[in-house]
Amino acid sequence: MIFLVFSSCTKKLEDLNQNTKDPVKVTGESLFTGAQKHLFDQMTTPNVNLNIWRMFTQQWTETTYLDEANYDIITRPIPGSHWNILYRDVLKNLDESAKVIGATSYPDPSPAIQKNRLAVVEIMTIYTWSILVETFGNVPYTQALNVNNVTPAYDDGLTIYKDLINRLNKAIGKMDPAWGSIGAADNMYEGDVAGWLKFANSLKLRMGLLLADIPSEAAFVKTTVEAAAPGVIASNADNARLVYLNAQPNTNPIYDNLVASGRNDFVPANTLVDSMNNLADPRRAYYYTQVDTSTTPGEVKLAYVGGIYGESNNFFSYSHVSDKIETPSFEAMIFDYAETELLLADAVERGFAVGGTAADHYNAGVKASINYWGGSDADAATYLANPRVAYATAQGTFKEKIGMQLWFALYNRGFESWTEWRRFDYPLLVAPPQATSAIPLRLTYPVSEQTLNGASRAAAAAAIGGDAVDTKLFWDKF
Image (cartoon, rainbow, N blue to C red; front, side, top):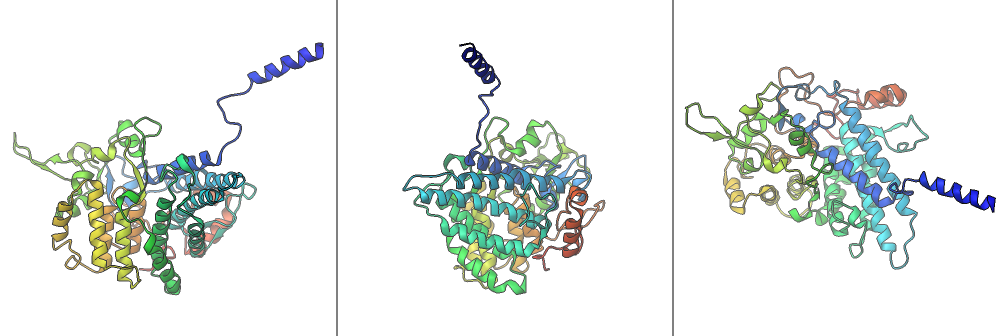
């Protein structure tokens, strides 16, 4: 009896040490949700420690602290932050999510759901890998995510990219829209497989076109682009987005950094604002606030005025980011209809059989962007009737026409804007006088890689032509 009483007391004491609010096991769905949130946060935030793509493409500039607008990526360890978030917080969680979901048994008739769930995780994984390759070039891939290997070798960027496209093909082939997938754990499409298929095909289209200037990959690119085209995002309702909440900590990172922080660090850059002013672009009202430019007492003369890129700017003298974008619950985007249509215009110009004309897709892309932001069909028609906007009469080659409209449409998606600027070489941007380098074409490898994985990093740097911001990556041929 004494033994039984003692055992009972010990058990009760042990129970007091258990935290009933912490899960004993982490589900695959919760790991996916966390990875997805980390990914959208990183691709959206304007925090200068994490993401300065909007300044690489001169869409925003700084007011007081000018390091990042002048392409200083070292004072704050921006490459390391981007690298760590994508590897540790996104890819590793997605890897664990796939393992947990893959080990879960489902009763008949649910094997199709299992395939869909794993395919959704795979597509999110492929997208994340593509961002890493587009940022750095060669990166650890085949030996990555293994905690027992702290010095993984770097793989060739083109080899990785083609493997990702092949993985994407397999994931697409496994999906059945008649069945569900990851459900409410998916904050992008809420488990809708049809939406994921459109995103996957749009991603495949973009990844194929990224390789279009590599002569040796012509056949692979043609097959990839033409296979993707019929299944891409077809309206703004299909956009790949995450809607934030009105309450922290799940508010949009733009709100966190521009409003909740109480700081006045950024204004739209004159480079972009002036270009849109010259075309009377209707999206200005949704991108920026206006500022009074009158010099006459009592007179009010409102206009869109961008801060001088790369120089000190008085926050109150220039236009600001619009209230719409600063809303706590404003959605973040990683792919949309406007981008898809402008990519299809590019595909037509390159001779790929994707249907329609370049002008048709260009017009659809511009209209989709204007409609998304709140403009009307009439606004889009007036804008497209401008001879400097109309596809037949706008200035330059197809690369300039499409590149300029991608620059405008991707205003709130800095990374994709940077990638398309590197691919099209438009708009023609000039580094500011105090810049520490030319406009970056890649991020340098993190300092931690030099100290902890030095041999692998050194081999990768030599393979790509030098670990410098002006080293062109394998797909950037012009």
